[in-house]
Length: 247
Length: 85
Image (cartoon, rainbow over all chains, first blue to last red; front, side, top):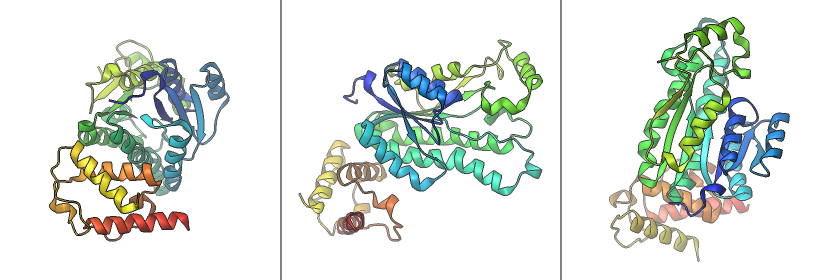
């Protein structure tokens, strides 16, 4: 096990400047972790959260789509913040579009940012966890990976791929004390779902068992559990947080 | 400690930790003929990056994977020199 006390473990959250990623950063900081929020740009909301977290949330700028920037990022995080205990792969594009009319470049862009970039970043950061014999990887997937949704086929494919990645990597690194899990949020009101319209969101809420939409903090709490010592025997699984949409 | 010593020491330490009996680690030892498996190799790459700051498998286009311990030492030697240049 790691000798670092739970309260001081470094956890990297990608896409940590807004939406679910920001909520995850806040929840992890509240649990006492030292969070490194990675995004292209900081945000007022992130800066406000960092102010409240008393130094437990730090920002590292990086465009994750730039694969060549990921190794320097990993090295910079280690040098500036210390060994990394956890990684939350949250950053993603949610570009909607009918497959029949989606430009190939847009398909490639989605796959690149939503699957290739988190895989490469995981590769770079999980090695340190393996060497320490302890660590956590949490991949943010989506219920759309198993339910499907009109005009989100490419997004769905990227989110489903992260589940396959989660299960296989859990097998690879489990013997070294590293857990790998995914969370599958239902529709959460964030910038990613802004384009859906109030009617669509109301319909989705109406179909869920709990008759409401999930909030970013619900997903954040699930991630915080998976990062915590309480989840020490949970690996290779998907935790659905959808207010019962898929129940 | 020379680069060769660092690598040999890391191989021996990881093999011990992972309960993989190893023959003496010499330059002509063929890695795949030993019990030093892919997981051990991943640990070696991680520790070497910590110690040397280089990861030749990510930094460079490695056309020929190292077969012997000597090949591995040469690969890291090139990566360290490339970093210093």
